[in-house]
Image (cartoon, helix red, strand yellow):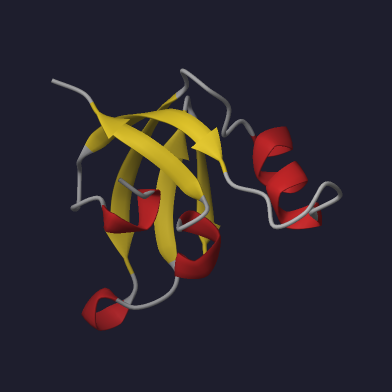
Length: 79
């Protein structure tokens, strides 16, 4: 499942960040921000009518991401 597909307040574990190419700057930035394998993420809220941006929390830090960026992060729901 993708981070962009999580429902509000749902938690998940990051399994991977998809890169378009070997030097994909967006994938590199997502990893630098903490979207790494095994990290817990939570979808806090979405923009108006479920649109951009979405607010996600990684650890104690919150980030606003475009849905297209969040779609690059693969996650697995936690129990």
